[in-house]
Length: 263
Image (cartoon, rainbow, N blue to C red; front, top):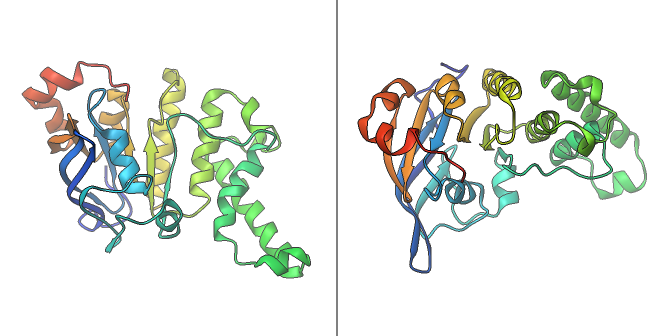
């Protein structure tokens, strides 16, 4: 599938990335690029290093060696909030929503990182703050509409069905207007119908011009929506190719695609 941007333009580039935990080499010399406007998936069995790799990209963990370049700027060593300000957002396998907040309020929290009103404007309730708050609310409602759950805007987010909570989390991530969205197991815990809806949402996000990098264990989802796939094995890159070629790779078929991927 092709996105709205030039697929030859790298949005993200990893070069020789390593992560060691004592004697354990969790990520070992991993290199790949993510083209702007594309959907790229990272797969591999439990313990392959997928989540560790995501944490390195997002700034949750420091790299032991190598470079991570996002939109032409090296980001290894930056904190998560610094990476987010550059235009990267992520979701988590275990949904993280705020108790006591409605679906709309949860999305608005994500939107507030784009807020321009300062502390004093908010404290004195200046007109500029009102205008910006209305804009944040309107955009958040648009994102809930994209996720087809706008009718649930006033419902407490944590009381929603699991698939709806996943949609709220994705909307909240999009509210920060990211250029790159990292999705960690977006179909985890979903039934076949909810998974199909997540696939539609990911494609809709890509069509908005947002590049997507996802870790996912559902091979049907991965093969249906991805432009390219990276396969990890014990922290190293085993293969990188289109879904059609990955499905024909004898070693991938033998060792990975027939196994359950839980981590």
